[in-house]
Image 1 (cartoon, rainbow, N blue to C red):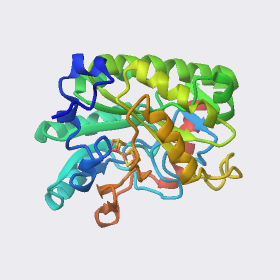
Image 2: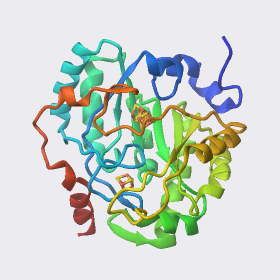
Image 3: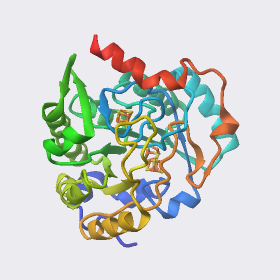
Image 4: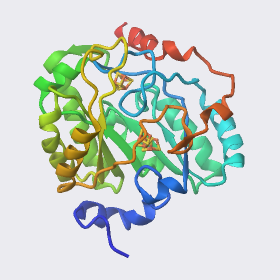
Length: 315
Ligand code: CLF
Ligand code: SF4
């Protein structure tokens, strides 16, 4: 079997065979996405940054499709839902936490949900996505928990560009705006990605391609991601969310998106089958079955999710 990671010696040295780890992961392996299903646990309603492409009423745009609301569950309810889903979807291989806010801004929920399910289902692959702000704080626990797949959205290496993308960053009880906030976020993303990759975690770097804002910088973001040991990158189109600051920007076209992916493929493996799925998505990537599994037990109105958190963090 050919080793797919021949461009990534860090992974080879520290994590064993990445093929073995990703063979059942529908996002990390194109082949797997027709065979294996994933389930997102919507246990992370809060967010600690403010992206201009997010309108804060819907799921995290970094990893989800805007305009689709979700239910919000406690870890206990999420575990109960998992039991039902697993019974009905035997090819379920991945349990992921992708919002609707940030997995690490809700770390207690994220950790508890994973611990609960892992206890009786150690064969599951656990996965999470994050904006990366809290990675320096939680990366050691992520490694300790045995999470081998982490997605970090890193849109730029330039704090000046970051200031155009992120309105605020809430960090250690303070609110930082503009370049200052973007710099903190970037430094934490870089530190976190390196830390995880060096410990055998397969890091996927998501990049939202925003025309006229960060599109020209994407090749350097991918190169840096590779240097840090990332396993792959996922360049995603901007979907202008109604009510967001970027609502007026043009959506990224498929042709320009694919051209960028082709260019970046030279440096790092590119994901090309992302569905920008919901924070409560269930099933094959091409066949979302989340509607079948609504629990009707949402612990807070989904459309209030991130806003409520931002208010709390501002205090
Ligand atoms: Fe979920 Fe993300 Fe894990 Fe996949 S989704 S946390 S890596 S299990 Fe997948 Fe959905 Fe695209 Fe994400 S298709 S939005 S890349
Ligand atoms: Fe950004 Fe947070 Fe919105 Fe995700 S939920 S797009 S990280 S502001």
